[in-house]
Every structure is written in C-alpha cells, then in structure tokens.
Length: 296
Image (cartoon, rainbow, N blue to C red; front, side, top):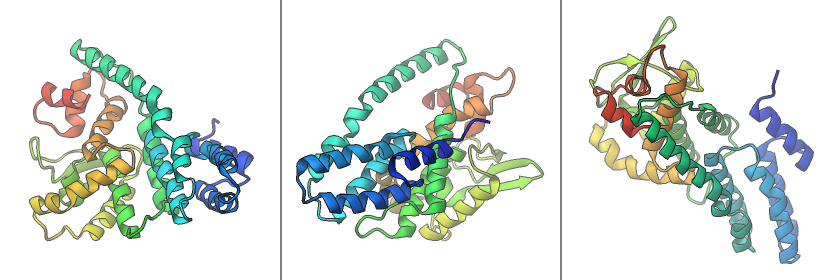
C-alpha cells in the first residue's frame, strides 16, 4: 500500500529535523533562530535554507504560502533580525514562477478543450491535499497567531477555505444559509442563494458529512450570523475573509468554489455527462454552459 502524503512528510521531517510534525519543526526553528540570530548573516542564511525544506516539501501551493507566513511571524516575534534575508531565501516569487507559468498553460488548455466540447483529464488530488492540510491544521492546532488575532478568528478563516473547497458553496451560504442534510447515503444541500434556489444533491470532497456539519457550526458560532440578514453578513465579513484568503494562498472565497468545480467535475462525473453539465449540477446552476464555463 502506498504511503499517504502526511506519512511521507513525517518521514522526511524525521530524517531532516529529527521531529515528525510541522508544528514541532516550527518550535525547532524558533529555538535555532534565537541561537543563530547574533552570529552573523552567513549563519542565519544557512539556517533559513535548512528550514526551507519544511516549507516547500510535499505541500500544496496554498499551504506553502501559509507556511512562509508562519516562519516570518516567528522571526518577527523574536526581534526580526535578518527578516529581509529570510524574505530573500523564502521568496514566493522564486518558487512560484514556474508554477504560475504552468498554471497559465493549464488554463489555456482547459478553456480550449471546453470550447471544443472535450473532456479534460483533471486531477482532483491537489484540492484533496489542500483540504487535508487545512483539516490537519484545525485538528492539531498547528496554525500560528499573529499580533491581535484571536484563535477563533484564525480558525474561521481556515474553515471557510476548507469548506469552500469541500462543498463548493458560496461565502454567505457557508456563513448562514446552507443547510446540509443526510438521509441514508443521500446528502442534500439546501438554502442556496442563486441558481434555481432549490435543494441539490450534496457532493462533498475530502470531508465527511459530520465533519462539514461540525465545522459549519463552529464557523457560525464564531460569526454569530443566526440573526443577521444576508446583506449584513456580506457587509460585515466578506472583505475581511477575502483578505484572509490571500494570506492562506487563495485569491478569494470564490476561488475555492472554482477549485471545487475542477475537482468535482472529475470525481462526480456521471456516465455520458459533459464537463459543463457536471459542473452545472454540482454547483447548482440553473443555466448550463455559460455559468459552468466561468468555473472551468
């Protein structure tokens, strides 16, 4: 049996750092940083390079960006000496230049295939890995808190990103209106805000029904949206959460819905169903091609 991503990661961490969890690597980095920060630039650069393995190895793009922030926060917390040099070594642009170029190639190819009516071989593993990374952070509390942040706030940002990827639902639906139900093996999503405004078959990626229910409850308990109108939810939280998504490596909450549609069009495709029809069905759109194309 092949090893899971988390098992591989733990083995690599154990080999390099002699600890097996990312949170333990962060603790080790803080200790080593404080030991090296007054010993000159060359020592600190070697330290940064050594820990860059933990940032970049076996992580999804969104997690890498988040990991960069965690390491930089530790540097700031402990005086910020040589922080600029960390930015030089832990640079997103240097790492992501080839990834961004590849992403643009994939987008062009996908658009051409959709317009030609072809079905593209989309790999959902990237989305599943991102969901697993968020879930692991939430369960093990391996996220870091920056100044003036409350833990429930940090958790809420990750919950929205994770549930957006797992369910494909819109921001206000996650914050307030979505009702998820299960009868036997059938799951339904109700409380949708657009499309035909009717309940649809609930297709979930990477989480169980009970996990989605649990994290929806936690999110809404934090946001206290029960007595709020939908426009009040958006006015109070949309900008704040979209800004937080950028720090988690996601452009905005709508991006999670797009990524869900990409993965879901592979996972939940029915025999004889086109790419556009699958996306329309799992997202709950009323119109078929035009809306689906926006998410491909």
